[in-house]
Amino acid sequence: MNRLFSALIIFASFSLKAQILSEKADDEAWSYSEIISSYKQLDALYENALYLELGPSDAGRPLSLFLIQKEAFGEETALSELRKGKIVSLINNGIHPGESCGMDASLKFSLDLLSAGGPNEDQLIAIIPVYNIGGSLNRRPNTRANQNGPKEQGFRGNASNRDLNRDFIKGDALNTFSFWALFQQLDPHVFIDTHTSNGADYPYTLSLIASQQDKLAPPLRDFMYSKMVPALFEGMSKTWPMVPYVNVFGRPPNDGYAAFLDLPRYASGYTSLFHCLSFITEAHMFKPYPDRVAATYEFLQQNLEFCENHADEIATAYQASLAWEKEQTEFPVNWQLDSSKVEDLDFNAYHYSYEQSDLGNYKRLKYHRNQEEKLQLDYYPKYKTTHSSVVPKYYVIPQAWREVVLRLQYQGIKLQALKSDTVMEVRSSYLKDWIHATKPYEGHFRTEVLELESRLQKRKFLKGDYLVPSDQTHRYFLATVLDPLSADSYLSWGFFDIIFQQKEYFSPYVFEDKAEQMLAENPELKEEFEAWKKENPNKLGNSWEVLSFFYKRSEYYENEHLRYPIAEIR
Image (cartoon, rainbow, N blue to C red):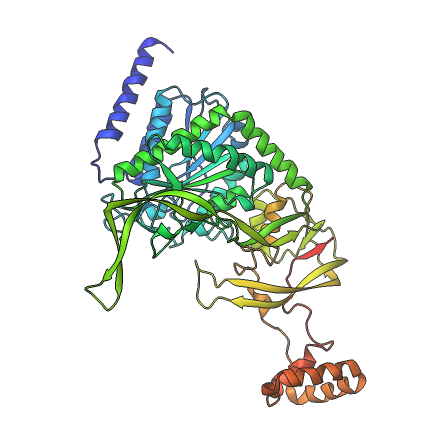
């Protein structure tokens, strides 16, 4: 590179930096088009920067990815090749575009990093400038009622009005499919999702969710919580002191709180299934916007510094987690708070009071920011497993469930299509007890399965149905989505709702005779029926209820009703 060209690059870089730093007022955030334009300029200015447009989004515009490394990028742009020999940090911004501090912080972080020559040779920085493109384009003042600026804010819902941070298992949005594709190719070691909080009031500008430790592979958990998390908190304490995410809503945090359980539906819950050190930054909604940007920026710097200083340890923890997954026969897939595990948390809080409202007959919560208190709170960091999924040798998935098959393929799951119709002895699960939601959540009426009955059956599977061996990478993900008792199973999200509906029925005037015949021929059934009558006296006046007892125990009752379609071979 000659001196004149080098000088031009430096001048252009300073010009762009001046534009980014000075053209916006303190209460303004960069728009989607301005952010994308700036990243494209950085790509043009720096050989070690690369701007890519990947898969589609619901807004009709492609999802963008910006890469930074030490050396110049060549012609090879396959993410799986670019990551080789690197510690990869993936930073996701604007999943909730009203929470734009990460979008602005990442742009400034990129410019400063490139101006300084880039990261160490063993690092690859990957940035999604704006994930929720539709929500970012739906920008206007006063989107966020509880937030102190910026002047204009994006909208939480995407172009199809979905909250993308609830979509990482169900995959309703095109954005999610594009994310799956880039994530599986990039296979990052660290994931950071930038947000703004919306709960309580307190003095801290930034709080942090580290992916819930009780969900993680032990090697990853041990490294993350014994080394990385303490280092990040220590590093931030010099500029923007952090606390664990203040997981309270509608009450003050002063009485203590629990760690956030980032289930797989959330970005960090999904990424941690693949042994990624996953974090969510939460800048405080009431703090001045420039401070929120600065605190988020500093966290990105601290992460970079940690990764550069501990690259070998990160790689070792990742490989050890893959080895753990390969040997593990069961995985935790549902949890509840462990209230027996409590820690002392040093916490600076605002004094608060409940005062009579002038609007109604109730007491309103009021924080007194001029009265700061140093407290030691009860903090509950642990969750205990309520269900572990035992992984079979094979899952068997009928091809008819193509939406499930497609989602597995996007995770790099290997499926083997049957070459001919085949009768196999499999283990089938029948739903015995469940709770259907009475209102939709993110477009789905969710189902919580409480109890299953397992049966060995000979079932016919068709040519083209799939055997899914569990002896492959990502078996933790398989257990998470295919076990009906999992907190975020495909069944819980409604992919198999049709099994709750019978397809064949009976006519009472015909089946009365059949029921009497069944009683006469089966003494055990008669005994069971007598017990049923004692337990259900209110149903004896309903012929349908009585005859259904017999129909469900007859050879006419369909095997498919309440049978989970995915079978297991153990």
